[in-house]
Length: 393
Ligand SMILES: Cc1ncc(C[n+]2csc(CCOP(=O)(O)OP(=O)(O)O)c2C)c(N)n1
Ligand SMILES: [Mg+2]
Image 1 (cartoon, rainbow, N blue to C red):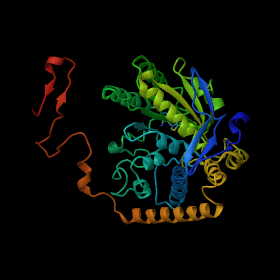
Image 2: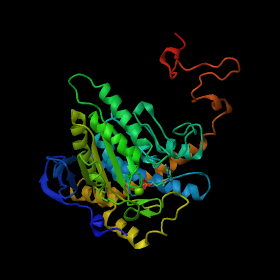
Image 3: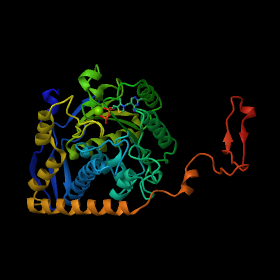
Image 4: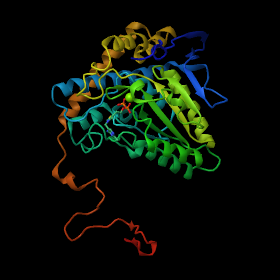
């Protein structure tokens, strides 16, 4: 079971300072630092538009994931399916602090990141239905959504595999830095259960040696499948795991703190100071995947307690009301509208069909599979460079 410090109620203090259409929110107590002389701000200003759009995105995520749960139970979705409800403030805060010039890669729990990076509910849900209009043209499914145009590199089914790829993305961003401008950063999100993998240490070492603009982002939802973090990890201060690499722990249920922490990380890493470790303190409401009811290794009281004291949506609703940006009635009306919109998008996705047979030979490495006419890659590297081959030029 979780220790009490992870279950503290989300800080929802609202200071008296008020500007015309913006408000100052107190986020002190939302951060713990490791190896840092500076820290994120203790208060942040947010405009009404910004807060409302964060709320709408988070509520859309919540409804989308609950809809996936229902559709799965109705057997219109099959196969692997890992839901993100409970963790919405993490993806939303990251999305609001970074731009789409920054690269993002994550684990199989990727529906909501896909939504942030150029997606729509119909595309994400369509991918789960296996239709041609789905996010990856029905070729990826729940765990493998990908959008190069928006610098989103997936969706990885192998635990931790996304992290070294993230360091590669950070390397590319350093390589392509424009003179006089800060570097774009790369963020790799992974779970507490992945955090002790050897490949992550190797990626961290190289990222530090080469001062890559890489953010190692551990979404600590306290469980790796059905094993609590106290049982699977000898260290539970994940933000300190980079040793010499500076670390930051963030209250991952407070979207304003996530955004401010990520702004701080982008500034630090983008300025050429090297990588950073971030630990988001969060929680998943569903079981690990659809085959896990999520109640055998944790009890209902723990889930209910988190919902009633730390829910990220209840937190942002409180901020909206305390700042007098929205009334309770306006919030209820918005929720009703979004519920309808999500349902409409699901119906839209259901109208699409599975991909045609002509799609069987697309999106694979070989360019032409016509017998006798196979195209080779442009360059094949042999062990002996002199015997390596260059084609098509
Ligand atoms: C290399 C590898 N080992 C094991 C698995 C099986 N597996 C899938 S998810 C998971 C737990 C990961 O937990 P965590 O990193 O905390 O992420 P969360 O599911 O909590 O988001 C395991 C062991 C896998 N997919 N890949
Ligand atoms: Mg986990």
